[in-house]
Image 1 (cartoon, rainbow, N blue to C red):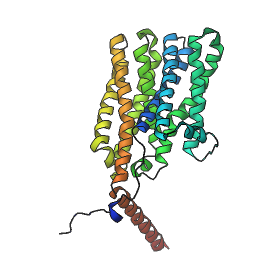
Image 2 (tube, rainbow, N blue to C red):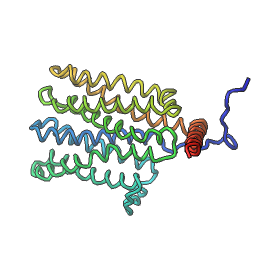
Image 3 (cartoon, one colour):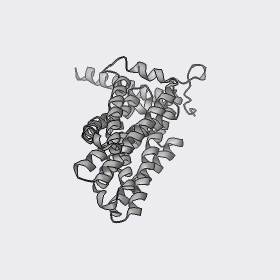
Image 4 (cartoon, helix red, strand yellow):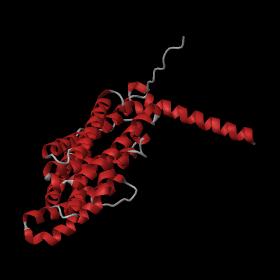
Length: 306
């Protein structure tokens, strides 16, 4: 009998070094998405004459992006490191572009929220609000590109789906704010956001968990598996509550909490799945061998055809 394969690396060290990011980073992923979704909620509320949605979205966008700044700077260790990133603009770097998107969004969201407190700033608040909404899609998805651009096996393999997961999660969390804060008769746009965001998030996460072969495994096991299963349940319940509980303020608020919690767990699940794939050498070795075998088979077929 051939013993089961035992994948090892020199001196017992991982082949791919796991990211040194702490739990500040998945929290940053969540609050950045929440800020983006809230900005879109505010723009939708303003465009449709729903002041409660506009107000909730503006304040939530500013609060969430401020929390994102804290988590990011805390992970960097020193505030000056963030300022140093603004010294350059490198289009090929997701981190560099993300820093500029984050900064532009923060300024716009700050002006929009200030206008809610200082009425004479209302015209500037409208400009800031729609400026934040324009940059919101990039803020919601650049972190997906950032993860997929690493050598971490399960993040890199999921590069086609991660932007959809993060965009859907952002919409769902922003909708959650609207469902909690707005009266039932003003929450129509939030309900539509909840349905769209949940559909994108659930579809993308399902693809990540089931279509990557061996590299889907880390998303199904351990912490990542528990987080993502709970996220799937909460997101589905939140979307259903948003649609079916439209006449009840309590049902809407509970649906909003469910969507927010599901979004948070999705970010932590994706983060933990990638980290688990970097710690185990088999997630690097086996896919490499499979790719080499496929390439050799393709080359052999081409030579046979000649």
